[in-house]
Image (cartoon, rainbow, N blue to C red; front, side, top):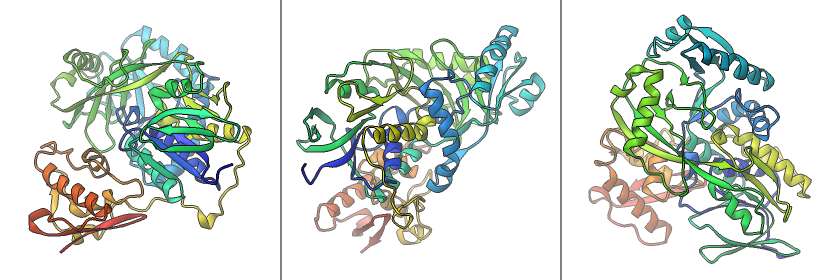
Length: 478
């Protein structure tokens, strides 16, 4: 066997692929993550409601329910160690009729009990005391205290970065062109011309997981895209919890939820479509969001929107998560068909995938504690503000030092969008109009320095130099 063969290649840099990489990095393995896009978390993982679901409504006995059960026990330690923004606010499923109350009592209370999730019916008075903006038509609701809010990108980035600190490689910006199997290894040809050999591979390619499976002749499942459109407002909404409708057959429904960083999210729609990359927002979609939310919160239509966006999630032909070795070649393990609970279930998915790999023959030898990184260092050191000086993003008070740090992380920002998601720059009221030119200067300077070119003249006539280490970087003026 070739000397440069990886033990495991993870295909897909969403939260599922990154979570799997983090788990595998605890063992003595040569690992590589491949992501087609220029950053992690560019697909369904970045455009969702940002909720960590308990799994109270998962169908008992499914793979999804098992992943959510495992994840409930794993999230607390991960959140603490990886410094992932997280708020446990709870949720309430609002009933506005006796029929909806019956659905809750006959369907969701039993499923919650079967899944080991604490839930209870609360009356109208208690519901409105917690969430005054909810419709006065409410007769009560299902309280799910364990539901929580998270930053999906922050979680994905943290998973990938801690894996990188533990020796895993992360390759961004080039997708898989084809996969060939021989007796010794799987050969993965990338779109940039690189060829990678690996003993095992994990198919965590999100909406494209069926296409990756098809590269080895596996057509055992199919994925179709379902778009969800959202509206984000920063107005004060008098609700303290995630406000849920009673679900329909096709969707968990249009909800209104706080956001972990502030503001409130309205949505999503559930629109089946053919195009996997269609993330457009439409007037019809926005109207559907507002119409759905005002059934729960009558004032929803009056809230000013600061942003509208859409995400596309996978609908699997099997109606459940697909976590198993391929029947065509057991060296390829699928982590596919991950629908709307992908963020919530990602730690549990990683546990099941690692177990599948071990059963397939992969030896999992734990790294000694002295060699293993489990805690994430602070993204921004306290000294960055004094070192960097100027505030680049006035709306969010983001300094040049914070941006320099983002450009030097173990999984570094390489685009304007990547800087935005790591720092919060461009997310304020001006939506980047005041800071994009300065951030472009910093990205260009960093790119030049990484390429070995002399420092370029940067902001306000100064010369900038980046000092990048394995856990971040600083920016120096000259």
